[in-house]
Amino acid sequence: MWKRMASLSPLVSSSKSTLLNQAAYGFNIRKSLSTGISTPVKHGTMLKEKTPFITFVLGGPGSGKGTQCIKIAQTFGFTHLSAGDLLRREILSNSEYGTMILDTIKEGRIVPSEVTVKLIKKTIESSDNYKFLIDGFPRSEENRIAFEHIIGVEPNVVLFFDCPEEEMVKRVLNRNEGRVDDNIDTIKKRLKVFSSLNLPVVNYYSKRGKLHTINAVGTVDEIFEQVRAVFSVCEAMK
Ligand SMILES: Nc1ncnc2c1ncn2[C@@H]1O[C@H](COP(=O)(O)OP(=O)(O)OP(=O)(O)O)[C@@H](O)[C@H]1O
Ligand SMILES: Nc1ccn([C@@H]2O[C@H](COP(=O)(O)O)[C@@H](O)[C@H]2O)c(=O)n1
Ligand SMILES: [Mg+2]
Image 1 (tube, rainbow, N blue to C red):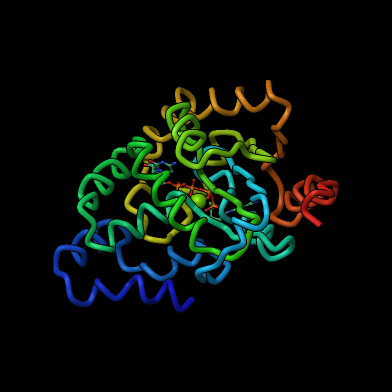
Image 2: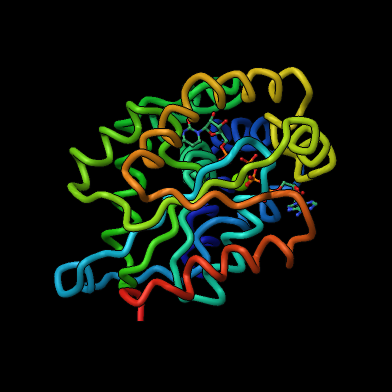
């Protein structure tokens, strides 16, 4: 929490980042960020001592990735990194990439992998945890390959929240967090990107036997029971 509030402080002093931030979030900045990194981040050496346990969390817009990640992190002690939240935070931080990221998110397109992977790497390196849930990543084959090259590891588990388009659209339009991409035009674009760029990644991990498909229709608790079953059998995490 300390780190999260600290990262918001440039908002107060920079009119550029304030404008970008307002454009990205509307009036609900802190609420949107609440699905960000759920474990306090400290400088640590855990990664050097213990092999990281990486879970990629995939699914279309509004399929419930963030909602379930919060529960997984609480129940199984993961650090939750949402790629989308890292990018939105980058917009707030007066980064040289802020405008580009905002425009890309508004259009529902994918930010260049190097930018996203560097943000993920920085967060992993600054954590003393070794179990990471990487939510909304990889969104494309380019994302996946960049992660393998830059981070140098493959995921242990890949979750895929499988949800009908109609349900995803309904959830996103009801989300009410002031996100700049929660409107029908951007959702349509995001759904196209999901089919053309995200699904090949889902298929890739399916072929490699790493994919766990979760039926994302039902109550949050019903869906979490399916997720729990996946992690309960992961002896390596204990
Ligand atoms: N099982 C569920 N039933 C009904 N609503 C849900 C369910 N799970 C999540 N939601 C709601 O749907 C909306 C989208 O959920 P969430 O933000 O977790 O999706 P997401 O996959 O992270 O989406 P995005 O990719 O756009 O970030 C939220 O308002 C959330 O409260
Ligand atoms: N790997 C990623 C993840 C996200 N984006 C961009 O952020 C938008 C919002 O992502 P959510 O996971 O919070 O829905 C997404 O539509 C992309 O524009 C990305 O580029 N790469
Ligand atoms: Mg999300």
